[in-house]
Image 1: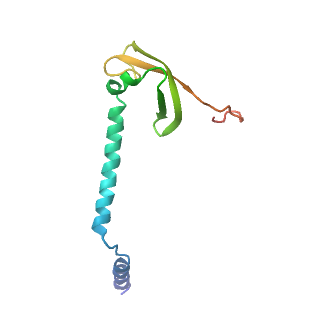
Image 2: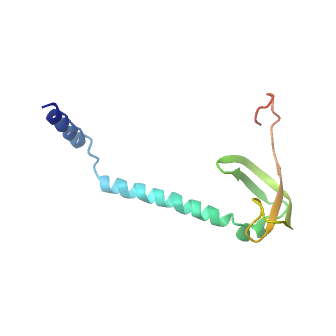
Amino acid sequence: MKEKKLHDLEEKVKQEMAVQGEEIVEEYYLLREQLQKLKRVFTDTMNQPIYCLPFLQPGRLVRVTEGKNEWGWGVVVNFQVSAHRMNTHTTARGWREMTTVLMWALQSTEKGGSR
């Protein structure tokens, strides 16, 4: 008896909470997800050394990010490519790029604090 009441109540809630144009909302959601995925692919491709190295010139403005951390904007001061043994910081081609960037930073007022 209670199970039937529960089932009836679930059906009533489903009917009352029905979203008009649910298919359109679902399609929009899937398109947004696909757009986010394509943005990540585009950014990853654009940040590959073969594409970004020609643009790393002194005076160029760059936005510095590390994973989800955003450090802000800076100015490229120097750029070097050096041959190194393969390690975690070298590219598949066997060299390492090092970019010196000048950035604005606030002095920390707390001991061990950030910024």
